[in-house]
Amino acid sequence: MSIRRVCATLLVAVCMMWATASGQAQDWGGLQRYAAANAELAPAVEGQPRVVLLGDSITEIWPDRHPSFFEKTGYIGRGISGQVSAQMLVRFRQDVIGLKPALVVINAGTNDVAENQGPYDEDFTFGNIVSMTELAQANGIAVVLTSVLPAAAFRWRPAITDAADKIASLNARIRAYAAEKGIPYVDYYAALVVDDPSRALDPAYSNDGVHPVAAGYAQMEPLVVQAIEKALKKACTTGDDCDCCK
Image (cartoon, rainbow, N blue to C red; front, side, top):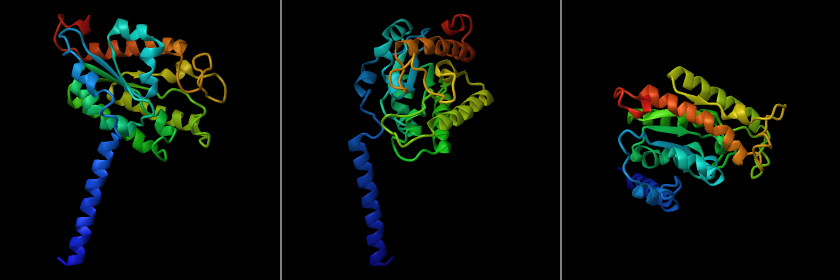
């Protein structure tokens, strides 16, 4: 091998090492956000199925805007504001699999459409959702998939004018995939969208057109609970003594 080729190879290796180290230093995937909380979490109790809600800011602020829901259900929120589906996939092992839940609820796509990490590609976003689903199932974790919430625009991305079309298209793919695989699907979109051509998030349920207020979460909660109970009952194979089957 020539000296030039050796130098080129070394340069590529150094660049890859730098990129990896830089990414870890910046914690692009948000691995540190819940690291302490995960470490402090008590082991799952037999007969009490653990449920994790994975998502972005819509999931992260849920316990603050409607805390009684998490208090009475014991669900664990693992949302990080601003994250796209690829970042959720990066932390899926730590924030979902490592917690040994019976079930995970996946809500992803809003920030992909908002282009928080670059140009939106529906195939990539959908693929990330499928990958998270398959990772969960490979580890014996039941899955509930949800629609992206309606949004006509993003205040932090005013150049995006076709959000409603992109969200509708992605939701159609998630819904079809869930039906094909027999996975419960929660249609937050239908419950929160306004009945007009804008297809915006109903202002009765949001102050900014993207994030629900308490009234919005009150609409979402019975829908996701019904899907969780359905998925747990389907997944339960331990007999009549299994709480999730009752």
